[in-house]
Image (cartoon, rainbow, N blue to C red; front, top):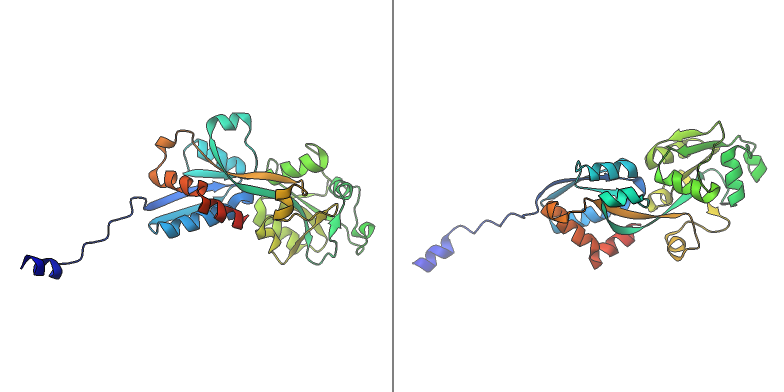
Length: 262
């Protein structure tokens, strides 16, 4: 009878995932595709986990993570010495900084010197570069954006005074929309799969080297920066799900997910 009662009883309810809950992350657009791929896979492994991942810029991701306002941040640049005292990091790849033009522009390659002269306003018309007689419309990222900082370091060796006609845009989505909307435009953008797949813009080779993931990893494309997750240094104070997520990111599977999303 006991056996019959056991067989006829209600099945035991599945135990709740102890990691279930809603978690937040924000940071730089150069790293967001990798972070989205990692959080998506982690949520597949732990269906009770819900992520909110926002693009707010690397500086904001650092400040919010250091202040405990989000569960972790992500950046597409190296930390400063002061920031390194406040946060720990996990590497999730590399990101290139590229030069993009409107898809209608047949230009495929520019030299480093040509890029410098365009953004300084010394080359003002596409006819000077073999295309139509169109005034060049220059777009630049907001000050302190990792994309802009990396761009300035490579092409100018530091801060620069751009052509007075340059227009400032914020984050990658606005950059892609602006360049895709103006036929004679040029700008700076993360050379990610997100940029490469946008049919309204074209990534350019610089001095004959295309900003592919392979060229970035092997060092032939030299305009790059690290992608990292950042979080407070005392891991014992992190939520269990965030500790588990960081372990997943460091694992062979996590690194494969990150590499495939770069």
